[in-house]
Length: 165
Length: 99
Image 1 (cartoon, chains in turn brown, cyan):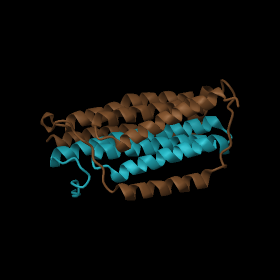
Image 2 (cartoon, helix red, strand yellow):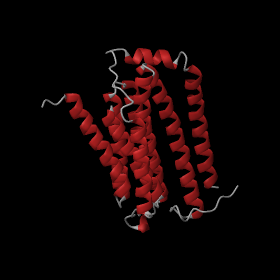
Image 3 (cartoon, chains in turn red, cyan):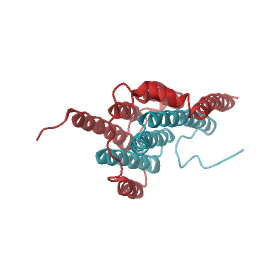
């Protein structure tokens, strides 16, 4: 049985993403949680590339791996005092959490199974057409997203600034 | 694409498990980011197939990514502010809401 290269790549990316998510769910050390989050975010960027969406993959790396992950690291540095020793992460209500997440998994698979056909994107048709969409029909949404980012930045600065008063 | 459906559903459910079971607020935020990432992948795959326009799907995914990043920034700021004021960083300790 021949295996397609793209199937192997997809399998590797999926394993990496699931491993990262499970590390966040199960680890007791904050450093491993950050590592798991980084692996997950990178694997999601890889999945976007697998779906032939390079703009989205690059944005995922810049915004999430380069931005949000660093924000999380800074937040942990600000909140953890040195006399706490090695901080340990704990979990509770594991059975209820497992039941709820299992139910969500079943609902999502049941509702989407067999309904999403594979799409083959024409080579080289990505970035130009994406720019046409963003600056064309989706321009109001694109501009709103920019304003939202600015508002979020100002809100974050205000919230943290007030905490220091 | 059935394999992608299973993978994203698994990631979504793992993210929900993190949100429901973790006691540390930053771990809960990480779980939310896992759910958002999984949902975004599923959204762009479905939009690409159903709309027949992968470029539109990519644009939508980009806007969702921006909104999720804004949510992460504000959420982390709130967490830092709450923990600094109260000195408590666990979900069951942050029970008071004040204006």
